[in-house]
Image (cartoon, helix red, strand yellow):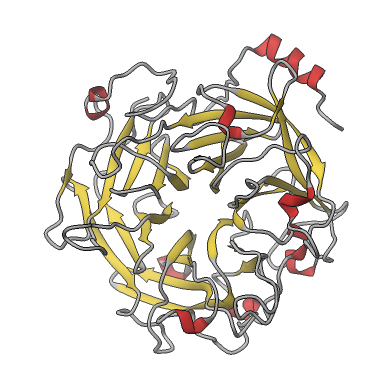
Amino acid sequence: MSLTRRDFTGRTALTGVGVALAGSVGALATAPHALASTDHHSAEDHHHGGVGYGPLIADPKGVLALPAGFSYRVLTHSGRTRLESGEYTPSNHDGTATFDGPRGATLLVNNHELKGPRADWPYPVPLTEGLVYDPAAAGGCTVVEVRHDHVAEWVGIAGTSTNCAGGHTPWDTWLTCEETEDRAGQNGMTKDHGYVFEVDPADRRANRDPRPVKALGRYAHEAVVVDPRRGQLYLTEDASGPNGLFYRWTPPHGFRHGRGRLRTLADDAGVLQAFKCFDSGGRFVDDLSRATRTGTVYGVDWVDVPDRDATSTPVRKQFTDGQVTRARKLEGMWWADGGAYVVSSYARDESPVQHDGQVWFYDPRRRTLTLKVLIGVNPDPAADGAFDGPDNITVSPYGGLVIAEDGEGVQHLFGATDSGRTYPIARNELNIGTEEEPEYSEFTGVTFSPDGRTLYANIQTPGIMLAITGPWKRQQR
């Protein structure tokens, strides 16, 4: 049943502009350079009052600056650490999730965002027998087992391309997303790409003979989350020309989720739809960058995708202006508080309004999208202290959000409290540029261990997985 403009206008008249979510992360607005923050703290306030863990201390090893009392451990390092099979750890670490492993171990599934032919990369994902989709492709996933001082790593899937974010399922598997639209014959590929694949961290046999979940569509996938109550999947698309879309997949009647069930679906199973937003006055919203105040709420309708496999036209180009709402750099997602937190990393000339990051919350029960975080354009990305370009995201067991930065200049892991106060957690100090022109890779794969004691994150280039521990504490609102 469609949520009409009249329905939404009536609801907002009764409930007000904001949507109150009990126990939720709350309305956030990052600072400095936050636009129209609902929390009126100065930038100086964000470093005091018990928020965060204090200033970051430079790392003598030149890898990771952390607050006092915190430490890090390198778990995998591309070109240095090795898999069980003897090959080097692949490069370009991206989306990551954690799982309870056997005998107290923690299992992590780690995407490797490697696009194009294998010859382009010194450390592609090894073509492990039985785990290969397309032998020409360089990307895939590895599984990392961490137990006390022991770390082991093996291939979960190989022969996929541009494995970017992804998502943890309620049945404890990983959905890895290909952020590409390459067809067979393009960029050296021998099969079509742009799909979602399921990887089981606990059962190596379940990963044999990889099969794409074509029912979820073929496009530049970024992240995916699962609504555990309704069984629907939500997916982001990181694309431009035109800007990408936010999707919902509804399973066919009678389908029951579970380990390996997605790969049994027919290619056209269920219904794949793209979202269409309108404001409280019933006006269509063409692009999410139009929102310039945190607390902005849009109603959401869903429009069927005509050809989900994009046989002749990319999915996002199958819609005309006015049919769907778009957004640039739709990136990481996390399911919590009964809905999906969704990142739009930044917007530039390809969007109606420029910004340096948004985080939205989609409430499937109310079918509303609420702007939680809005970062203004960072005037000096090379200066430490400001944040821009949110990408991967997780909800913290200590309150609020933890966000991986993929902006210009300095790169951070940073937190945002319920009331919108931000604080640094880590800074990447690994200079992959020169002394005259320093360059720092983005953070990716931010996620906590199942027990909440360890924060895992990656430095994408060259590809380093880090485990961060310290005196975590509940953050004040």
